Amino acid sequence: MDEYAEKVKERKRQRRNEQLVAWLMISPYLIIFILFTAIPIVMGIGFSFMRYNPYDSSGNAFYGFQNYINIFNFSLPISKTFWRSFSTMLLFDAVGVPLIMVLSVACAYLVNKKPPFYKLFRAIIFMPSVISVSVTGVIFGNLFASNSSGLFNSWLGTEIDWLGGMPFKDDILRWVVMVFVSLWWGVGTNMVILSGAMRDVPNSLYEACEMDGGNRMHLLRFVTLPNIKGALSLTLFNTLIAYLSLYGQPTVLYTLENQGELVSPMMFIQKYLTGGTVYARQTGYVCACAIVFGVIVAVISTAQRVAMNDRRKHTEHTAECELYLANRGNWAAYACDECCTEQIGDAYNGKDE
Image (cartoon, rainbow, N blue to C red; front, side):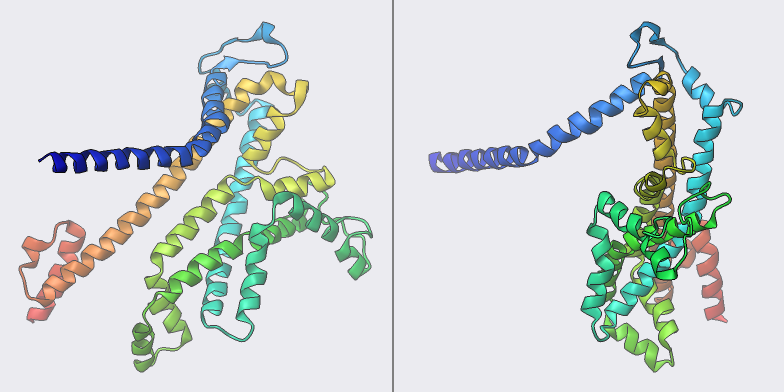
């Protein structure tokens, strides 16, 4: 009995030591998270309910929900600027997200087929994903400089103002450059995730499709894509969040020529929070904008995840119903929701006929 008690005590001691080691391992991350994420968020929420100026505390006072009300007061110039940047971001997302997903799937499919030099191709596509924003700025600054020192202008013998003008309004070139930078930067990571998922698709499914006369498009549409839905959901979610929090690409292009408007809410928030005494009196309002923008992003991302999970569950449930139907069970008692009851009921009645 004493020996058993000693073993129990020893196991408890080992478990405590393992937990202590685990906490010690994650403590640096927790400290950084608390100092640079949690505390600033709490402070930002507090400032959003104040008339706050970090350079002049004499006018600081509780402001209630007035900052949030002013966000939706479109007669204010600052509110117009915020919502214009938000609409510009959504327009850019509508163009960029589908393009990056299509290119990611195409590159992953090509790499998975292992053509000659596919490893080199994979490395070239993935390499931009590990390059920082500052290095990207140097690269595209040299490529798209508006004078003859820019590499593109030097090659073409022109002096095209690639990054000038008002972005997304009267200068389509800036649209093209920004979309190009985003594609160059974002395809690599998605390609690696999707190609890994494609490798897990059983070869027997491809062989069965080919035996039924399927061509390459049939293989992609009816075999590959349905079997990588999880990876597609993950990459789409990551891409959407990255584009909703758009900051790096427009900041790089914005600071290169120092022209144009703020083209994303993140740039709007950064400009007004770090603009010095000129914008300091708007600190409370900008904190409220940051909270509203964060809530919008959270709602959109949550809705996307819920929709994808519901579709996955419905697909799995329909498959289970069809399997039960194949065993000629009582479909009406088995089907657990109306969408499946009608579908399975029609199939069951058709089989009886």
